[in-house]
Image (tube, rainbow, N blue to C red; front, side, top):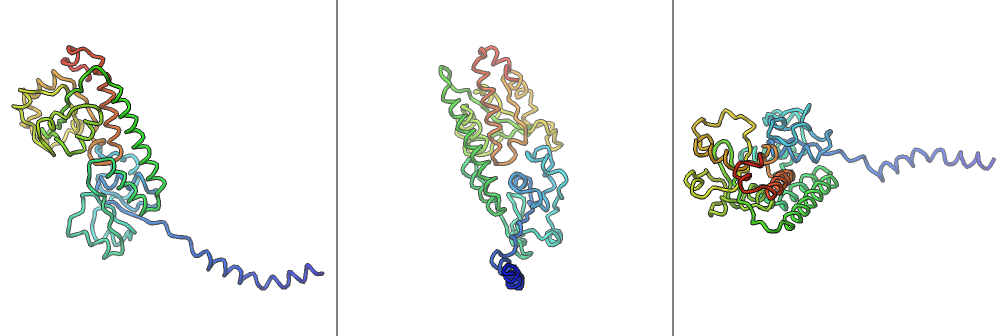
Length: 300
């Protein structure tokens, strides 16, 4: 009888207890959504966000030079128009370079926040970008996982380079189909030097992106070439550019060439470590080759 009386007293209070619990805990927080406007911003969004958070990516997200191309399959491709953004209603618009200055205020006018992936050439900048984008998406743990792996791999590479003894570092030169090369202060320079090579272009006092000087190559050629973007077969590559010059062709035939896929170099992102590891593996092999083998292109 006492138990029944207690049940009769408690039962009318149950609806109020339910209301109290709802007020105390509040509604479940909505998962932030985002779009990315260029293929470099795509890499960060695709790597960090849960798929349900991605409303659209750029039209180049599945291009051959996109590292995260496989993850972009089946996701809407953004034309970057105001009407499309208004219809999608993302919480964030993530961009790297692919958003013109006069459009920078558009996301906020549509109720979204503009997120800029910062330009830089160092692992610290990459880590900051990962943490920034991961933070706004509520994916901090995923960002920290990628950051930790990147720095651990770089530490392992540094250890391997430090173990090299008895052989001076080889001089490497970056080359593209258009004849563009890379001096100091670039991601390519970071990759070449972290692999234990000397950047032959930076050694000559050049910085930033440069056009190859054929005269310099003939007088003082590098020990090897680091080549990329040749697999794209771009129609924009001129038939008469320096990379197709007969002298350049002989240099490429006479020296080792390390081919790095374009999707490792097209953006400043954590997977640049893949390119460093490719180079260091080839350089370690080169140390086992004779000078004759090196001149014969033993790394091909």
